[in-house]
Image 1 (spheres, rainbow, N blue to C red):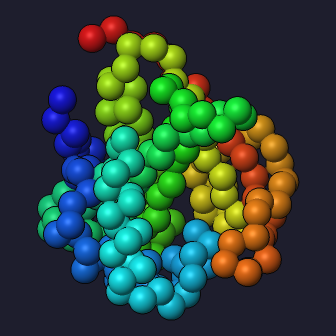
Image 2: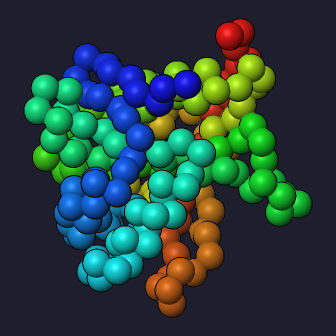
Length: 181
């Protein structure tokens, strides 16, 4: 299946190595780093490792401006780990980031809806998409609510990462019904 979809304003395509410059630019912006809990000054080598890991996700999309092909962000679906520590075949963890110049315009909800269609088409069975967001990231919180994600846990503190204290997060879930091919 071709993993490309266009919406009214964006084009979603597979995340590639050629996206490094745009990917690095966004992940080194303080506003993006704070919103997704990443370090504010990653090295180029660290960003390359992140890109390589993200590209191995079952679904890893670049979000481009449909008319200019400008790199706007990414949408990633990581394989979800079950309570027993095993990888799930039908559950994914959603991650995304967007260029701050595009915040507040409804771009990310539009792009996620397109990406969910591709994820849903990939299997003929019910799937769950899990997402977390920091409680101080109200934009992301509202994106998930707008898309129909159900709030499963209104506040939890995840593990400490890199010696940095963890911030409170909310946990969401969206169930994608089975589809017929």
